[in-house]
Amino acid sequence: MFSPAAQRLVDVAKDVAATRSAGELTLQDILTGSLRDPSASRLLGKLFSVEEKQLRHTFPEPSSIRRCQGRLPLATEFKEAIRLARRLALDYPSKAHPSLISVPHLVCAAALSLPKAPEGLHPPDEEAAAVLLAGWLDTDGAQPSLAELTRSFRVLRCDLLDRLFGQDQAVNAFVDGLFNVELVCSADETRTKPAGLFILAGPPASGRRCWPNWGRTG
Image (cartoon, rainbow, N blue to C red; front, side, top):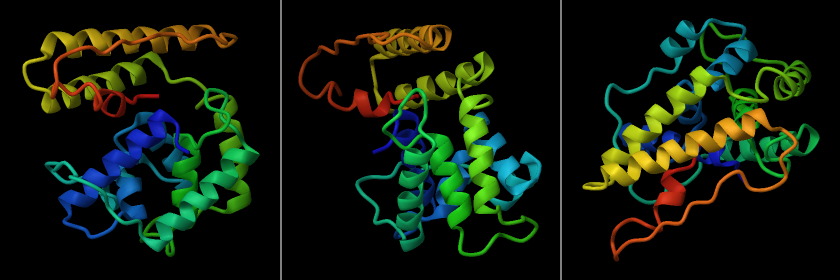
């Protein structure tokens, strides 16, 4: 359903909800999590016609994030946003993941599905948001900049090192490999073959099954 980057955003939102000791995952959580992604925060600013500083004031991130253990039920508004995101993904598919909900689809749907726009923000118009989304996927949001990639992988490296103990060398090799894969994909848009292949080997309880989920980046 979700692209790897969109799934990672949902995971961040779950951590935000867990930090708030919330009983369900809400749009507030996904919008707060979006501000950790430079590209997503820029898109959110354009949707609400405000600067990033005001967005961070409206959707403040907790000073420390607690990991979400297990599943969280989805709020009704969040379910509606996912349905809208699916429709947007069909109408305006991502070049990188044509059949999946990408981060721009999810951010757009979350902004449009808010029952009431927070104080100081103008609720986006669905038609105008669709036009913005289509242009974003074609130009601004088609490929992340080198600075955005670097920031994203810096966060990923810290996240993996925080979760996996005693495997610093493996984490660094894995993240460096993923970074190179993203550079190849950004430079060669006509590529149809896999840009990279990772083989995870190790003894039981070394986290092999968790790495594909924790290592989602784009």
